[in-house]
Length: 124
Image (tube, rainbow, N blue to C red; front, side):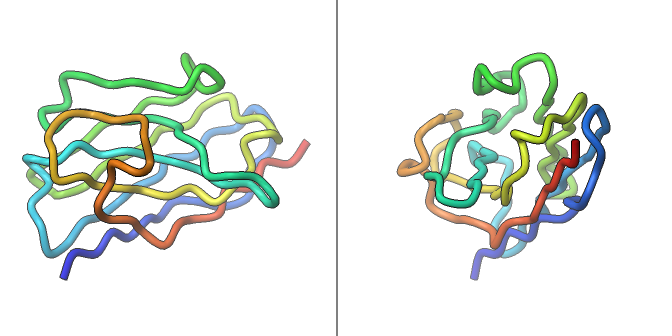
């Protein structure tokens, strides 16, 4: 059974930083594209960042470009999202996702496995 467990969320002031982690069990991620998505109350889930299986290719939502960095450690079966210069508008539940293909993807429908999410709250 594949499980994705996110951690690292919390309450932070605007301008602060958080580092999210996504630990995967039940499947080696070294052949999987990985992604981060987020969902704020009363909004649809939206793409944040994605990374290819090797880590050589990444893609970001325009709203987080230059502030967020996605990375991975395949040896530890873990993906990270470093979030800097946080804004109140970034408050949401952040989800980690894995797909069976090794390429990255911005489409939530292309992912096969999802975590339960971790809450990020940015206060003004």
